[in-house]
Amino acid sequence: MSTSKPKKLITAEFHCHTIYSNDSSNRLDALIRTARERGIERLAITDHNTIKGALRAKELAPELVVVGEEVLTERGELIAYYLQEEIPKGLTVVETLKRMRAQDAFISIPHPFDLRRHGWPLEELIELLPEVDALEVFNARCLRKVHNEKALTFARARGIPMLAGSDAHSLVELGLAVTRLPVFNNVEELRRAVRETEISGRMLSVAAHFKASTLIGLSKLIPGKRSAGIKMLE
Image 1: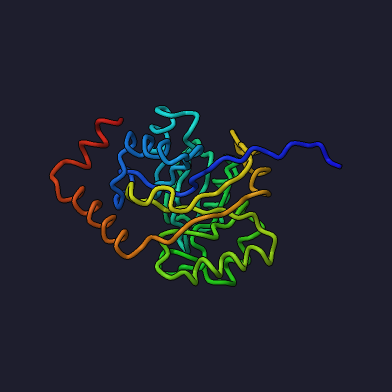
Image 2 (image 1 turned 60 degrees about the vertical axis):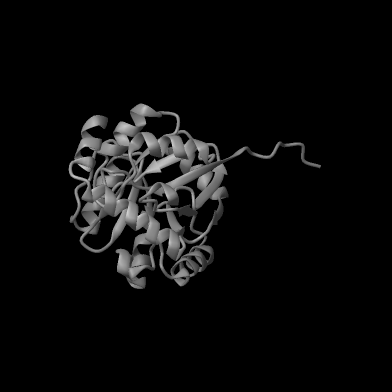
């Protein structure tokens, strides 16, 4: 009979955005506060093609925040976690992966089957697998649940570590999709932890999608609000 204690699992949000992404209304202070209120113990900030917001958030909450970046390559999107240097958008897939690996980043493929949101054709996705650490199998912002179903089936069939993320662009979305996994504090611990993930989440409803879009739109319409918010946090 085994006497080993079960591993402590924590709740992680692996995909969210801040006002450093042009299409997000999430201010850093509110995002951090909301994450704590919702029981999120690791918050990966993955702004589009920048780590400025994630680095600033890391200063505000070093025990909570993981510095990430959602990078648009010339073909599709990749997410890197535990970055120290920003990776520019528009590079070839080979060059993007080279720069991610040079930083020993943890690499994941977000919403892989959602081709309208920079997903990947099947042939290219299969080619990518040896280069990545995990696959996002549940993204709360996918408009069609079949995209998540395909990702889950694909990952299970190939034994690929799995992540979930809300892809939150507004606070109402944060924590819609989370990953439960053993405690991790660095990239090597994350690589071990993703072997034992539990995925849970729900899709962003049409009503919630409208609310989120409205919040984001309002943040852009109010003159100076976005730029002032960024300036205050820098």
